[in-house]
Image (cartoon, rainbow, N blue to C red; front, side, top):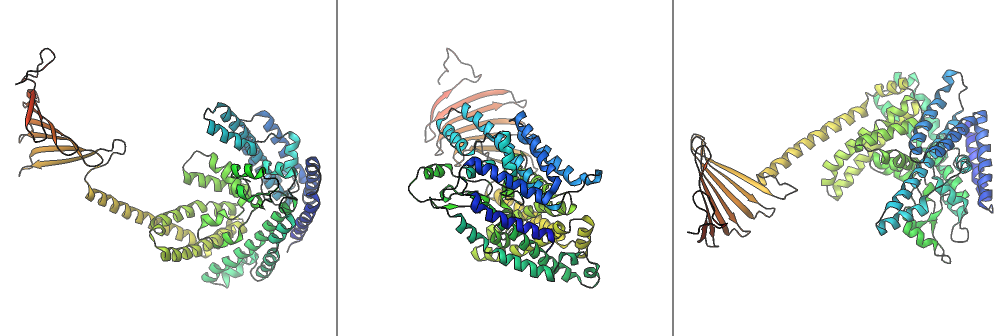
Length: 584
C-alpha cells in the first residue's frame, strides 16, 4: 500500500470518528461552520496550495447562480467541465500538477456545483409551472414536490455545501437539499441510531482490505505491463490474469466506498424514513409518505441511509447483466449522471447512453483508458437488450436460470476486459494488452451483435409472413378499417372483375363494390351494395358508363332484408323535379 493511500485511509477513519461529535452540535449554524472548517482542513492536508482550484471553481459558480436561474444549469455544466479539463492539463503550460487526492476533491466539488445549479433551475421551473397550473391536483402535486425539493442558497450557503467535510475527499455525491436537511439535525430520540448503522455497514471493510492486500501481492497490476507476461506466458494466462486484477480493483473500491458511506452515516447525512423510499443521491422519492411520517411525533420511525448508499457489492458482483451491475456501482454518481445528463438530453436512447458514458469518462480523467473502457459500454448494453428481447423473454424459468448464469459469466469477463483499460490508463499499454489476447471481447461483442441482427431479421420476416397468411389486409390503427382486394382475370390475364370490400375492425361488411370491365379494361358497369352489420342488404346502386367513363344510366334501389325492391329513385338522366324523384 502506498504512503498516500495510508494518509487517505487515516483521514477517512478520523472523519468517521468526528461524526460522533459533529452530530451533537446544537444549531444548524454551528454544524454549517464546523463542517466547512473541517472540510477545508482536510482539503489543505491533501492539496496544499492547490486548494485554489476548488475555491476558484466555487466562486465562479456563485457568480453563475447570481446571473441567471433559467440557464444556470447549462452554463455551470460547460464551465465546470471545461475547468476540470484545465485543472488536469495545466502542467503542460508550466503550472505544477496537483496531487492525485486533489483530483478527487475537484471531481466531487464539480458534481456538487453543477448539481446545485440544476436544483436551483428546477426550483425556478417548478415554481413557474405551479403558478400557471389550473388543475388543482397537478398544482397540489407540484407544491408538494417544491416543499421537499426547492432550494434558495445564498453565496455562503454554496461555499459551505461545497466544502463540507462529509464527502469532500471521495464522495458520495448528495444533493444540496439533502445537505440542508442534515443541518436541521438528526432525530436521535425518534428511532435513529447512527452508531449502530455505521457498525452494521463497516464490518465488511477488513475483509475487503485483507482480500485486496493478498490478491494484489500475488497478482499486481504492474505485472500486466511487464514484458515477462507477454514473453513467458501464453494467451489463456493473459486472458485469465484480467480476472484477479479486476478483483483487486473491486476490493479496493469497495473498501473506500464503504468507508465514505460511514462518514456520512456518523454525521447523520441522508437519514430519511424508510416509508418515503429514499434513493441513492436523490433522497426521498415518496413525498406523500414523508408528509405523513413527519406528522407522527410520538411513534418511532424506521430510518435508513439509502440516500448515501454508494456501492451495492453483491449486486455489482452477481447481477447477470452489465446494465444491472453498473446500476449497483457508484450509485450516487450514477444518479447525478442520469438526472443531470441523461434526462436533460432530448435524443434517442442509444445516443443518450453514449453521451452519458462519455460524460462519465470525461469526469474521471483525460487518460484514453477511461474512454476505451466506458465508450464500449453502450455497445454492450445494445447487445444485452437484443438478446434479452430475442432469447431470454421466450425461455421458461429453468431456461432463464441457465441464461442468467451464462450472461453473468460474460458480464464479469467484459468488466475485467474493460477494467484493464480503466487501470492501465494509457492507450499504448491498453492496446498492447488487448492485442495480446486478440481483442477477444471486442470480437465477441461484434459476433453477438451480428447474430442478434440476423435472428432479428429472420424473426421479423417470419412474423411478416405469418401476418400476411392470416389476412391479406393491412389494418389502419387510426380508422380501424380493413380493405381486402381481389381480382378476377381471364386466361389471357385480362381483368374481368375487380371487387373491393370495406369492413370494420370486427370484419363486418360495410360496403361492397364491383366493377365490370371489358377485355381492354374499359369500364362497363359499376355496382355498389350497402349492407348492415349482419350482412343484410340496405341499398343497391348501379351505374352504366360508356368506354370514356361517361355515366349513361344511374339507378338506385332500396331493398328490404330479403332483397325485395322497395323503391327506385332517379330517372335515367339522374334529374330531379321539385326536390323529389319520380317514383316508378
